Amino acid sequence: MLEQAKNALKHFEITGAAGEISPYGSGHINDTFLVKSTPNLILQRMNQSIFSNPREVMENILGVTNFLKKKIIHAGGDALRETLTVIPTLTGEPLYQDDQGEYWRMYYKIEDAVSYDRVEQEQDFYESALAFGNFQQMLSDYPAETLHETIPGFHDTEARYQVFLEAVEEDVCKRAKNVMEEIAFYRDRKETACVLGNLQAEGKLPLRVTHNDTKLNNIMMDKKTGKGLCVIDLDTVMPGLAVNDFGDSIRFGASTGEEDERDLSKVSCDLHLFRLYTEGFLRGCNGSLTEMETAMLPMGAKVMTYECGMRFLTDYLKGDTYFKIHREGHNIDRCRTQMKLVADMEAKWEEMAEIVQTCSQESVPSVRP
Ligand code: ADP
Ligand code: GN1
Ligand code: MG
Image: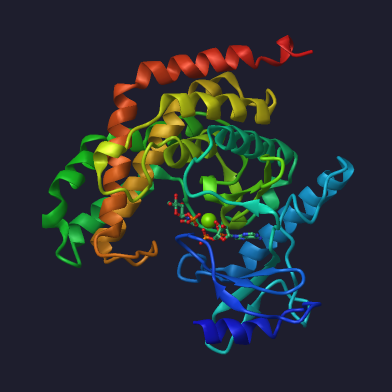
């Protein structure tokens, strides 16, 4: 793979000499490399089995980043740090296809910034919420109809439930017997898969341009200011639900344990972090959420956690073909943390609703100066 990456590198229009190249980051989907250069670069092999049309992914990313750059410049910001910059190939393309058919793309590395795999300082979580809310707000006038659906039905939880049932039925790896409790957990909560889709179908939740993968490690935090600097991993920017963007951040960042923690006694939904994120997200959205969206924020958290755990379980049943795994049973460990979180959210449901209500009253635009 490193050799392939070195070869791909030669096809991009870079200014400085390229030095050392090494695997980078902890994403579950693409293969990411850091290329030492001036400036430093991020080279990624796109996951083609997941993104079946990489050109459409790059069209979306170019559209969104160019749109954001204009707004950032207008606001007096630094367009090279506050959004991704796609570096073209020598032939002016946004991606390079190698002779094995693999697609590669390149960005400037966002410098003096860090992405976290867990909340280390609670203020960082608040700042990430502000930035993700603001990201959505900045894209509120983006022409949504020009965006390609890079993964059809990405957060169609009901459709994902059907795929899960098929995976149980087919049981290609004969693993279902190991995870009967987990399978029952998702079956018992089938109604959770339908709630948000139904509200959307009834016109009660609007489609917006959303990020759809708002994990804490998909945002670069400025090392000096501590602010959320740049939202990255734009592969799944598509029309979606605001509550899902909120919910995916809670799923990952408000957990007291890591996504793949094996000691489940360490895993719970931290309501203090939940409150902080809610405050930041509502502020970042700047009054743009409807009453229904605000009321459904806890549901977004539960549904995203339910969906993600079910996806990990489905992948385990199918033989670990989607998410990168680093040990045997990795996907099932991940699934179990998500189940623990869903159960914990169910136990804390009223408190979560109360927190959202209090935060939304505090951030009503009319009380702002
Ligand atoms: P994946 O889809 O596999 O999650 P990401 O695009 O999120 O891929 O990249 C993986 C990790 O690489 C990120 O979590 C981040 O730490 C790092 N990364 C990606 N792009 C950049 C960038 N432009 N500057 C700095 N770090 C980056
Ligand atoms: C993947 O790409 P990454 O690692 O940021 C996945 C998300 C999951 C997440 C679980 C395109 O995110 O949907 O919530 O793993 N991205 C894709 O950690 O499937
Ligand atoms: Mg990522």
